[in-house]
Image 1 (spheres, helix red, strand yellow):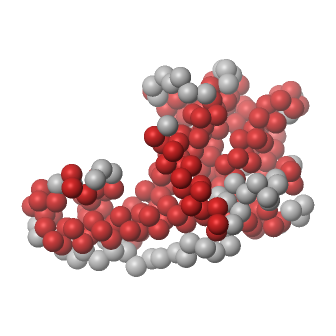
Image 2: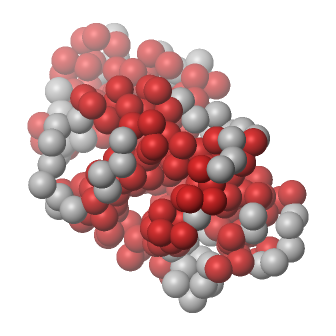
Length: 245
């Protein structure tokens, strides 16, 4: 079995989705709206859980989450973003808090989402997921940060799996993905070699390539949520702190 990694590569420090949104300013461009929608897709469950943690019922949290994204994408609330603050994570949580304080009563008079579906949100599944999560003593803000971090990691795993599938290496990915966690010394390279019919040296090379691509995709995903390349390392540190905090 070939151990070469998928060849699809994306540059990290390109014009990011968040910088596209910020650069659009007050203009309502299709490109900026699409970029904002892509960002929001990752954040909808962390925000839904945040609203529930704030004490809203499941029904109200569903209405709020859908209405919030409709407000974000249709009312040009993005003009309130401060490019100097940089991070989409900070902007969207502040925007939700403002929405809870100022916009909810207005939105209740309208159909959920302002009368249109901005993108697909499986809100019923979100509540089931929320119910299954263990209770936490963390504040809603810290809990949001942890769910944000987990959502980004899941997005990266989905991208990585898709790349391996395109290269017809789905079995290799499924066998090796466990090696993305834990220390290198604790990895069962011998067991993996026997399962995959490869020698242990080839397994180590394949794992190294998988880990490298995972880091690249994670860095790229983080870069898409900040205003400049210089903020990537700091946001990476925040992500890992949120996971262990």
